[in-house]
Amino acid sequence: MKKVLILGAGLYHARIVHCLKRDNWHVIAIDRDKDAPAGPLADEFYPVDISDRKGVLSIAAKRAVDCVMPLNEFGMRSHAYVIDKLGLPGNGPECVEAIVDKERMRNVWRAAGLSQPRFSVFTNFDGAMEASREIGFPAIIKPADSGGSGRGIMIVTALEELKSAYEFARPFARNGKIILEEFIEGTELTIEGLVCQGKHEILATSDKFKPPLKTRVATSLNYQAYLDEQTMAKVRRLVHRAVYALGLTHSATHTEVIVSDEGEPYLVEIGGRGGGGHIFSTIVEATTGLNMPALLARILSGEQPAMTPFFLKGACYRFFNPPRGRLVEIRNINKAKQLPGILDFGIVKRPGDMVGHLPNSLSRAGYVVTSGRDRAEAWNRANEVEATLEFVVCRAP
Image (cartoon, rainbow, N blue to C red):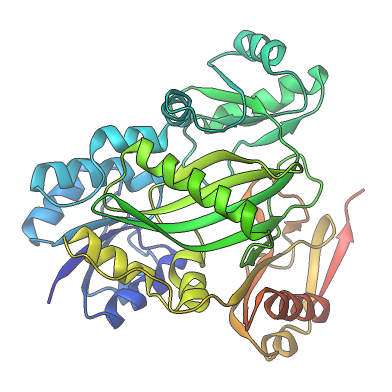
């Protein structure tokens, strides 16, 4: 039985463990939290920080693993370090640096002549002021290397908002660099894919619904993306070129693209791992029939599995966003959970917690993942769940 080392054992990684076990993998998980939720589900678990490259290497070497799978940005550099030392397939150190550092990513794409928002990078507020004169408003401010989950991202519409937006982004800038980039009005997409020996295959696409918040946190991802075929063809070509420019060879890909109101796609960013939450473990399989974690493990162990989707069905990843205030109670939970087409359902917030304020995607109140024969059916099922739940909130003054 082949051994896969997964870098992370959090709540949402439990489903990844199940996906790998269904494909007959021996799963070894590591996480700095000794009580990590997915730890007991793995065949072996070690309380090691996934950013500790030498600690990860020690486990990988001692257990003679066949592949090392990063599940988020925090494990990417360790993945690169270990596969380089052990001679395993994966994305090497230079490639990973271009993935986790958005400045490098954008410079690679600029050199390749790929369509992306105009941008400027800085390390202090004077630099932010200079960037705003170059880019103008509205603009998006974000850390160049934040670790994901939308940390530190904010739209800036005028100069007087720049200081607070800069201070919002600064704590999450792990490498000290912040980006101000052109805001493009349009439809934001996510594109899930796999790269096997340098060939990229797109598996599933979604469009996002985002409420009018400065932090740009999505409240619904809808599969498959609702765009005409001509526009989707342009998106696919751009994403393939972006992947190849970065040099990914053995990897999952999670790409974000903005399609302008004029129908032109612009690259936002790429993650060299599966989409977060339920995307990698649940939604791709529900919409394509493909066990994405198992396919990635096969790719990272040197195999060349078939990656063509069996079908394209619908799914909706809906995040609950009650009015802003203090949560008192949530009614009709059991009734909502019994509605048809639910793949998973969860409430994150508890009575007494503040809700309705979304500084990043980690602040959502809960979620439901629905499936359907097509996008419309999955969307309607998510609407029914959301309409059934009743969030009782003491409104903030």
